[in-house]
Image (cartoon, rainbow, N blue to C red):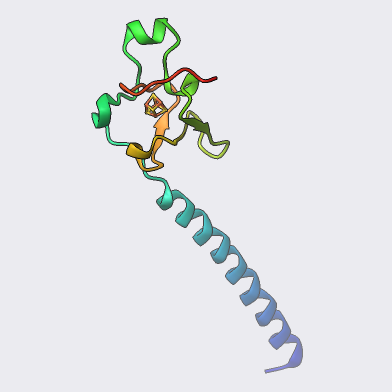
Length: 99
Ligand code: SF4
């Protein structure tokens, strides 16, 4: 193998490995997200009409933490929800007004 060919193949291999590493990181991040199961403490992915009308939904709850990487959802910090993700339009029986 000529020196030039060796350098080309080495550069190509490192570029491929770099792309694979980034893809793997994104996959791990996606897999790490656990969504709260519907029904847990009365959790619904969409707040019932009465609560929605009163502005009571996950995005206005004290326990909600928005996540820029998850459009339309974020983390619920309520210990019973174990750091799971919830829809910003969601609602559960533990809703508490954000201070
Ligand atoms: S505690 Fe708040 S943020 Fe968590 S699921 Fe219930 S309403 Fe949504």
